[in-house]
Length: 561
Image 1 (cartoon, rainbow, N blue to C red):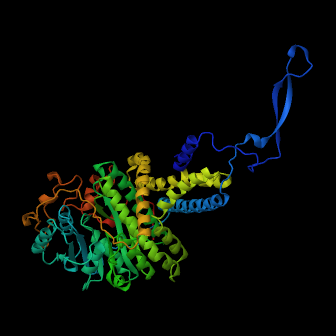
Image 2: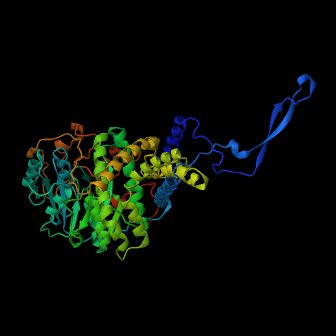
Image 3: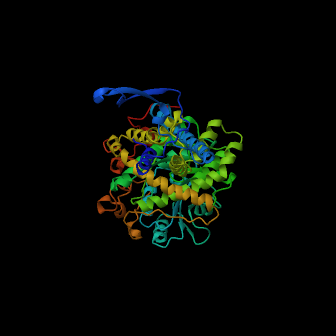
């Protein structure tokens, strides 16, 4: 794939014509000389016959070399460019290392084999803000889980919703008072972190699971997320996120590929290599005692997941991830919604980097690779403005007369900016798609470049804004939902008698009623609807109720302990 920076530099050459004028003492001097033959008319020869005279011209006169203007600025600029290139190379190697480990390394799933245990009491939080379109889906799904009912409590946290969310939550609580206990917030700071902080006040259970309102857990997912907490060293656990609206348009298909790379490769490779696996804020859980030990959620955080990940790690707790704990979500279907989402992530991630990067290197008890990869994790979004700066700097240096493409650094710079650097991320995405069994989607891989450019510009704006205006009030941008809204009619709530078979499909979840293509009906195990979600269009569906620990992709590497 051609280098974008090389294209920019080529365009600048075209616009500037033949380039800077040559100078005799530019510095590219060689002692060699080259004979040049040219026709002459020797004097004193009749008939004007021609002869050949040899003129010796210095070789450097044939070379158009620029004169460096402002040499000090050019030298400093080159040093900065080399640092940027070095960082790109480091991230490139990281991409390749993760992908190689996921394809050929030993896979660690230490908690998957746990099917029977003395399951702990747990609380499930479902933060909600104007979620009337989707919240009934997750509540229906939670009615289906096979976790012991007497050891589970669901607290939907209504954060000042202005639509029908409150009525829906109250209707479920009235029908199932032993399971649902809504919390309606009317004051305090807005945002998910503030809502979660208020919800855990007075909480007695030590295991806390969190699901965003648009997520749909499978029947066995609660047990799978609770199993790692049987290990007393585990402070948080994270499962895999799979988009359910993948077939909607090109954007949703590209986001599905990015999600696959982030979870199928990145997260699982971190677990395999013993570095920091990131708690994602949903489809996961936190040990309440560990959470309180590190100070709980910060109310002013835009990305409470990254924030609590770093504080738990610095507090000496482990974070467990398994690629086999799957839950289903909606991804943005329009570019403006996507841009607002990644800008919020970039600001929150940058805030966490500014707070915790120094402590990551000062805190005892962490291995060198945990510190190093944790620093790269915190610096992910900072690379966007650095990439843009590198491209601008390369053009600036060219017009100063410096040549950043000279010598071995030239090869390194071009490779890092273009083919090798970009291909490393694309190779990671392609590997993830193959592991998922969706090989046909690799044809969309070139489209990722367009999404990469949009993301780079958007996150650069957000990072600069956070670095320059870090004290301005944080504004929560809620991600838009796309499912059909349903009335909060209690008659739509499924009725389940104790110790009876799975629920009948309520009208609100009937896919044939046009709620959303591929949405998981309440009476089905989420795994049963897997092909309709676009995760593996060609693979047969697992049997209903089949445990996650019994499912294994034919393309997954051999498991290790």
